[in-house]
Image (cartoon, rainbow, N blue to C red; front, side, top):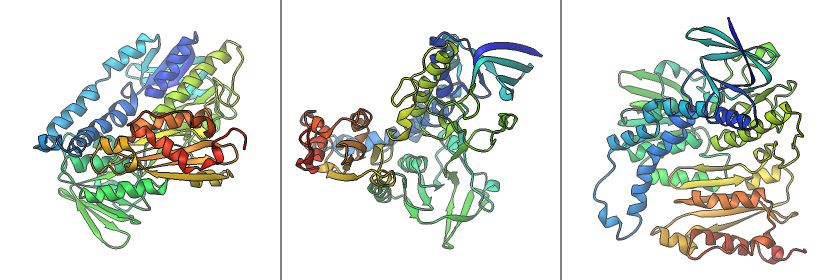
Length: 477
């Protein structure tokens, strides 16, 4: 059996694993990356990129129709075949040769196969040519991400439902689509397939976007209903049956829902199966618990980076963690000081209260940091201020009959922003300013001097500051 040693072994070549490897190589380490599927991972082929490619055409069409003068030039509807073809271009037709070229260009060694931990600093890879044993001189980084969670509902698995992986790679638009779930993926894909012509029914056990400010989910539900989507909140499926070309769901209230296809978007679970975690005494079915340098508790050579640790299931947060992990692995290997204090180079501090996220629905939802409720649960004396985005000149110019809302969550003790949420067309572009304010802990009295350009939607910052009153206008309070 072939045995090869590297400084670092990375299991999983998604965007997180790629970035761990790249950063560690910049730090002078030799790296092997193990991957059993496509290099680039879910984001490139079944999540971020294809889903946004499906969403954007409908978004662009609605934007044109929302401006008088431009609306007159729009005489047709979306071309589903062209949308799917454009989507395929962003996934390179599910060909990862370009990603492989990039990875190998960093100096990493790609090992194709299924990797499992078989001992301390040891990974055995089942390749097409037989097993290969890789030895890590310094560290192993698990970057295998998550996979769709299929709930235990009678008949569901036998009904062959779509997961998010199936729906983002679909080659035809179904005439009707039922979606189980009320989170980000469910709402985004409901919006996308409604634009493409499917009759969509969205079934959520609770509310939509339940971890965000309540007004965000309410706005998305209202707009989906206005576009013809049947939104059933407070309902769950108790039974599912497929007969021929129809899937029938029995809801908790006894109502029946029929559709040509069923998408299950009820959350994710860690992709830990077959990793050999039990060899280390770790739970093989749970997220891996890490410290802020992404090191697994009790194992100074093992790191869990990205979705696999359950801290923030977002591509950009995985890459953020990857930069910290790659740097700290290289630093520890070289015996250099570790900066693991809050906001230090090697600490993934932002995971705790400064995570930005955009939900690409109609309307968009952009948020960062804590909601008002979450701030209260952390014992923060918080005040929430809100403003109607439609009253901002830049928004009214952006689209006729613009509808949107913005809010800031203020730590009254510190006089800083700890959370922000924006809802409305194209609010994604407002988010990074809020992220900087939260991460930088910029005092509100200083934000008064950050003058928003006129007429842009960013003027909402001035209006939100005005809504806080005069309490935060001066440095001394």
